[in-house]
Length: 258
Image 1 (tube, helix red, strand yellow):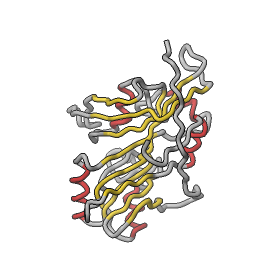
Image 2: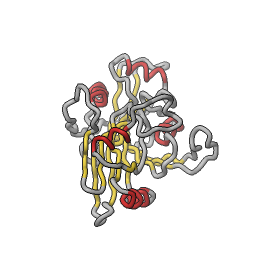
Image 3: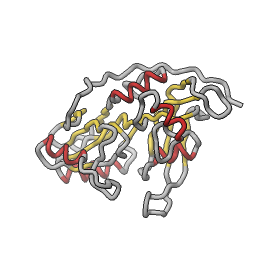
């Protein structure tokens, strides 16, 4: 039996910059002499790795050329994930930000679209995860989530004539391999567009409607600046395909933390 349908929460849409026809430069969300936050597009690998499989286009290379100087990536994003990517321009800044990343002062908020309506609407997923291929040892992993909006579409699912979807704010409290994606699978609310850990039937339904990307977006970074400790909060707008998904579901992308 399905539970009662929760009331949809209204949000104000973020404005995205005009969609470029062809560009190698990444949108700069914040920059000063020591660090920058850029908006990584979905489908672009952050750097070369064993998972690259012949790929030659990496965000790190683009950013070195774009800024005209060395860059040091403070954290990583999956290839299929879009949004805020933090980098430093010198080793000392990278080290300071890396230490901050391991503390409670550094916060990463993601937006994700999943199938179903998670209950309760706000909670903590506490489920150990391994480190990915070749790293079988499991370590503690926790992700806080909150349901921001819900929708029900005329897409047949199992014994039901419709399918339910939810927009989540996910805040990982640890940094495990594909943590949010695997945690949503663990609670049986698979992320839409996730070809590795998602539900192929729902992924196909969205592809048929023009949404081919994984619906995970690194929406906001909040961290103390290494110079003076002032708190920086940077939000990344979604790309054209993300906004297409939002329109399909009758939602708008938040412009500030709910």
